[in-house]
Amino acid sequence: MAWNEPGGGNNDKDPWGNNNRGGNNQGPPDLDEALKQLMDKLNGMFGGKKNNSSGGSSNSGPGAGGFFALVFLVALVVLGFKSVYTIDEQERGVVLSVGKYDRTLEPGLRFVIPFIEIVTAVNVTNVRNAELKELMLTQDENVVEVAMNVQYRVVDPVSFSLRIEDPERSLLHAAESALRHEVGSTDMDPILTSGRTLLAGNVRDRLQRYMSNYQTGIEVDKVNIKDATAPQQVKAAFDDVQSAKLDKERYVNEAEAYANTIVPEARGKAQRMLEEANAYKEQVIARAEGEADRFVKLHKEYRKAPTVTRERLYLDSISKVYGNSSKVLVDVEGGNNMMYLPLDKIMEQSRANRPEVTSGSDADISGIADRVVEELRLRQANRVREGR
Image (cartoon, rainbow, N blue to C red; front, top):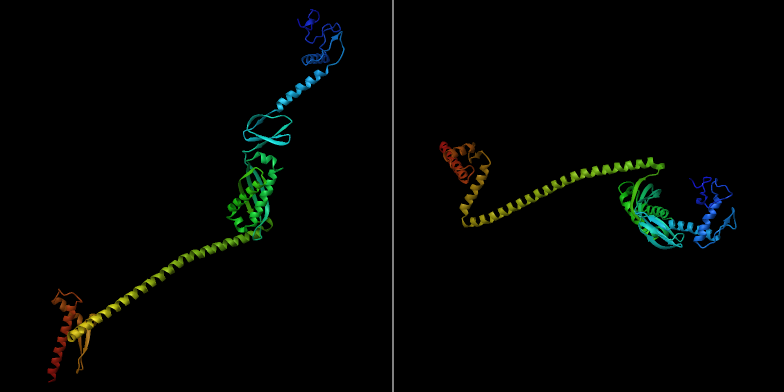
């Protein structure tokens, strides 16, 4: 039988203690009465006075000790939740104790003093990005539009959280300053063509110096020059200028290629002519020295035997003359006719009679000369006899 059923005599089992209330136990328990009983129990736990109830009436309300106990329990639960702090693996926790830096929390489950210590979680592993696009004035007084991307990380969470009020905004301002400084020190052509890599490296170094001087706790990983173009208002004229410069470079390269082809060839010809001239010079000098030396030696021999030497010189001269001609005409002194000597036929007969003698040798020439002299003597003797 249920404890609240009528009759049965089970009113003493009412957990709310509402026995014999008004002689009717069929209604639900009174909420105020239940709260009063809970406060009585709390008062008993913390040394307060219990409320006595009889005949459906109470002498006094809940005690002050029970109220404070309830407040204490609620505060204790809240403090328990607030004192536990979880730091992610990618983060570091910067703890401020009464507004002053106290310590840095590593990843894991950490305990802090609620309402006294404040934790700021800072991500130190993610690579962050900052975009910048501005009009810049170059060293040669041209205007270019540069778009830049900065990739950075937080390496010092304390400096990042406490040193600068807005470190990311400071990074943008410093990046713009570094970019303007480097663009203002560079001509327009390198920025628009092949000098972007060098420009990005210079901007990265300068920006990192700024971040270190400002103590922002930021490390710049990379700077990318995404785009560098002329302003839209003058883009058409700028494209024409760039096209003209490209044509100029192409013509210059073609001219240099042609010069690289012609100049070495001309230098080779000139060097060959110099070598030939030097060789001819050496040849002439050597021949002259040889002739001079031969003349000196011949002069010595001539002084020893003038007749023999003179005859030998005569035969050598005749050999040189006859060696270059195949026919000779001889004018006989005292006669009206000229003698014709077919030297080529005579030489052939001489080779036939003496095949062992080589052509053009001194013996061959001497034999021909002897035959010519003998032939002249015979013809001269015949003319003398005919004249008689």
